[in-house]
Amino acid sequence: MKPLQALVFLLLAGCACAQQAEQYDLLLRGGHVIDPRNQIDAIRDVAIRRGKIAAVAAKIEPAAAFKVVDVEGLYVTPGLVDIHVHVFAGTGERRSYAGDSSVYPDGFTFRSGVTAVADAGCAGWRNFEEFKRLIIDRSRTRVFAFLNIVGHGMRGSRYEQDVNDMQPKPAAEMALRYKGVIVGIKTAHYMGPDFTAVDRAVEAGTIANIPVMVDFGRSNARTPRKSLEELLSKRLRPGDIYTHVYSGLRGEIDSSGHPNPGLFEGRKRGVIFDVGHGSGSFVWRVAVPIIQEGFLPDSLSTDLHAGSMNTGLKDLLNVMSKFLALGLPLDQVVLRSTWNPAREIHQEQLGHLSVGAPADLAVLRLEQGEFGFIDVYGARLRGSRRLSCEMTLRDGKIVYELNGLSRPDWVSLPKNYRSTGSPRWDGIRGSGGFIRQESGSGPAGD
Ligand SMILES: [Zn+2]
Image 1: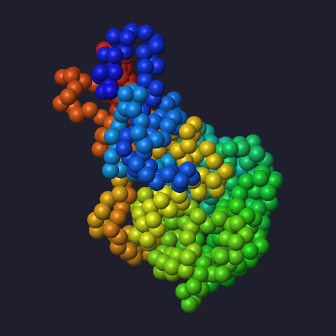
Image 2: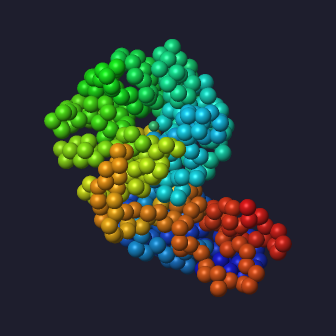
Image 3: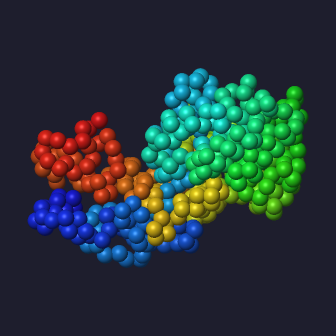
């Protein structure tokens, strides 16, 4: 039913019961659903009611839905989950991930199919509540956080090298106070020759019963490499996350081009391996040989920040497309961008399309053509497929769409048309996108 017809129907029916006329608010019809958690990889209709997945089936009656959107030829996946981003923007602090080096989540997530992110340690226990107030509470994207073991978080090297500010107790207390928002502890950028940063992060993670994500610093002439083998086979717990796995900066690959045996050892113990692409941590000459020897990542993530997004990274869809170019099947790429990362941060309500789950979805196009994918040093790998985002839904509402699949052609509308959507399915703000209740009022087109 088109919105105008629906409006007429509502007026004719003239009672509150008309609101229940259709069983579903929105029906995405005819898409190729990939939901790895539920082992669905087939053409399916997806029905949404009150922000939740209501049905996934080969055929759902369109008349049962208030709004039908045809997504034939497109892929429908759970909303993408990116567990390594930097989004503590807005403090005004220069050259800091707790400031200018971060980006605001909503400007970068929905347009690439991402509905949930985890900030990877921008804030520590001293400034987490500011991060929550400025960003987490104000974003439409679901924002989780790894709390930095450094009390000041990622405010720069002066802070991040200070072992005295790595205090497990206050970090764990803050994590427990914001359970379900703080989903892990992060240690990053530590250059010392010792395991202090890792051990204190693990101590905090153990008290708060959450995983630790490790950026293992980097080695240079002044700071000889700490043993990656020891980190992965002894220091980390099962469920802890090693990010930047294809950087080559931390001993992931040896001089003869083979993966560090510690990677396999860690995986056997249940350590999780994450991409964390960023502006310095994804290199073809590292990723290709490691993957050729069978070592795939558990989760794809961006390490999105102001310094990485315009380099080889771009966005999560570009990272996913890189793994398609490396030969990974699409369902495996989707698994590593939805259900796997959701599970890694213990948010099992996300990352799948089970009935009753929050209706966070991405509608993706798999473009065929000649594409190039560049790593952090500017080296290119060619590919023939690229994922792009056609539509994103958060809690059952369309929050982004590229080609207006849900929209009427303007010539079909009344001469002085304004808003075209309905609050039952339209979540696009700033477009005047809702049905106006009476002439002359309604939301301003800001
Ligand atoms: Zn990062």
